[in-house]
Figure 1 (spheres, rainbow, N blue to C red):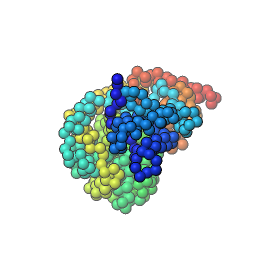
Figure 2: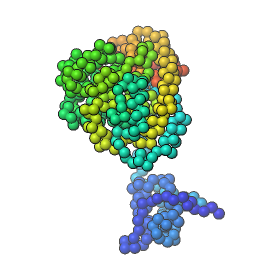
Figure 3: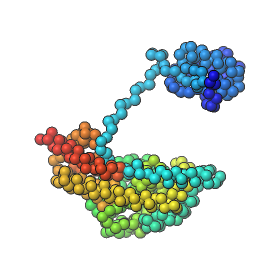
Figure 4: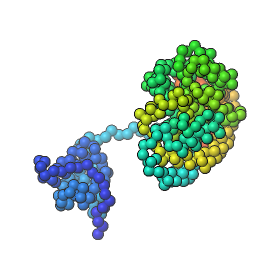
Length: 470
């Protein structure tokens, strides 16, 4: 005969001899009420009678009788050798949760930008590093520790960023974050604490950056971007205390900040005594040009360098970093402390090991070749299927922009593509209402074999939208 499962399971139930009713009726009442209001859902496993009796310090017979009564009323399912479970509610006996919304149809081709190929994530290498970190982490590092992050990772990042991006970093001025979004929010609050009131943001840019700035206590001021990056001449007239820029590969236009603009930006920072936040989000991936170092390397006293693993490895890691000028470091440290007391420390040690063993370098080299092949295939088939289009932003990153005819309707194209289960972004998603209709096609997480049929399907959608308009 099988015995009732003895695996311990906690259940929030309390009984008292001083409370009204018998001990059994108290158990029945609490479970009955929680099943009715949905706190205990159908299929939830409950403690065995022996386990619950032990938790409550009462006779097992009391629990057996209570479970028996609830089973007779249809609230529980009790089978020999199996753990008791909450039963499916009878029709009309309890409020039925709203049915989940229907799942969207699975995409055939996903050209949405800003996503790397997560299927290539080096799982084995990361697992080994994570096991090593969990096995070797010290008792001190298991506590909260320095909110800037563990020393091992901050030192490894300082070396890595100096070697690969030309950033001027030390263990002291690196702050580990939970991705770029948190990093920007922390810097905005630190700037506001230090007396700043306005921050310039590239236009177009991700709409959430303006929301982050406002929540951080700063007024966002849009400054246009053209083919050479942010318009520094207009930045000089904006009367701001700081600026957030993406010099290596502007998002969403794909522009690279020209050397003349870089020098002008540094000159403005010095003359204005302002701070720049440099988002180096996908600078590791460059194809038709030599590597461009970080602006922070030109002016480390006035540039906050920001990066993350979101584009190089996977967004799910939630690891990012800041290299902070001395004048802002204490405020950033304080804001990080108030945000979350520090990023997960075992994962930090795992990433330090990952860097030290060269896993990130190898992954980047492998993926640069893979992304270059996808980009080349994308450009070729765009030339075949949409010869009238202008393709920009191809020198680096994980997406290109495709300018169509002025008469084309972005939203009509989006609708036609959606009907064909093809996804992508358009410039109007970023608040751009003038200029030619422009699509943003990401190739980071689209297999190379899917590029050609995907673009053909997209071209069909564009032609269908044009026919509908005609």
